[in-house]
Image (cartoon, rainbow over all chains, first blue to last red; front, side):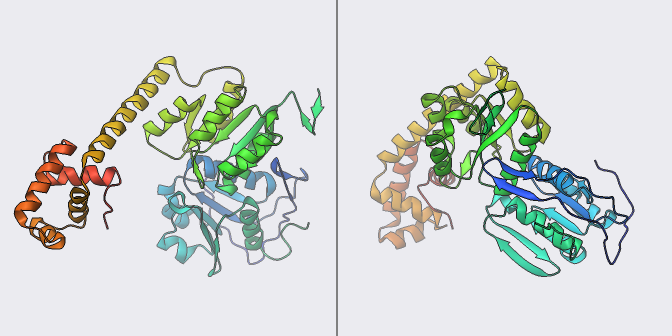
Length: 153
Length: 229
């Protein structure tokens, strides 16, 4: 799904993020399949990390558990151009670039050079993860969506 | 439909061995959403995988394994799955671009190998095909991979023989070469004459069956004889 939508920003995103996570032996599963009402202005999430199986599977989880998000998946080479055109609120990439640092409020450098660690920046606040979990990524999205928008569990 | 330990036994039971947790969990999510699949275990290391297999792991049908794990290569685990419990099908999912590593995985007993640059749908499809008894690799591809492993092993053996022929002094000369020193500097560093250094170098070239200092250095670096800083 690589459609282009013109950037739309709202100071107060007003969508619900009620999907929850359940960690178990079998992994992370949606506790509820109830769909949330579609919000008018969506949080825009850009995935441009390597390799393809990583970004596609993580994007699929985002779409399932947080259907209110506008998730776009691109090749790493298209990261910078999409920072300009797509204007993401959150970017996930394997190597953060100057354009990402300057223009994207929340970004995650996920497994740079296939390393074990990852780095997240949320409004300039950096967090290093020795072993980032899927739940950490979802939490970052929820925080980016604003207060009272995250997992109610 | 029968249910054992909470898992529908008609489903394909999958073990995921992958150290990048966020990907592993997302992959588990994808498989769980596919009809006929159940992820029965997740491991981030060889040790965790072995712990799982020694416990309830007997109920695993397919293991999807990364090769580069924090506590070692996945080859041993693939061999263990193939030898100890031949009913577990192994699909290797690796970030490596080295055909030799894929070939080694096949030799160890992997039924299929996929690069992590594959589409997620292709990974799910590969597991479905393997479970249905289909081969992901043609016989010709398997033969070529096994030949590659054989060639590589022969080269490694020859290299080790050559290394074993080097004297301690000759290894010191190689290490000095790896530090970027020329003949004169190597001689000074090892407190020998330049003529002696050259004699050592001629012997090194002969023993390693190479024709130049540069080739000797490449050989030494490739085989871990010198550390280039």
